[in-house]
Image (cartoon, rainbow, N blue to C red):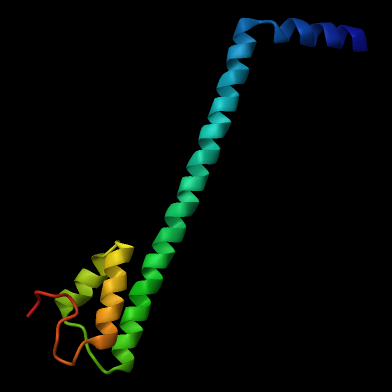
Length: 105
């Protein structure tokens, strides 16, 4: 019985359709792993962005500075870490009455 199973496996492994299916399965597995990794990275990046937005809001709150509705909307829409870093610095240094987003009234 073992010999028959072995012969059957040898025969299957030499079949071009079986080889193609095996290659496609391996390629699909690799693509799924890459997609999963990218999804995790996107989630991490979104978490960093959200964390920076929350810190900016907390700093302004502790400094008793209210965001204008347009500044709040712009902050929530920002997804660029470099820009969020600049806004964080501005939140630390800005004076009451100044806009968080430069160019805002």
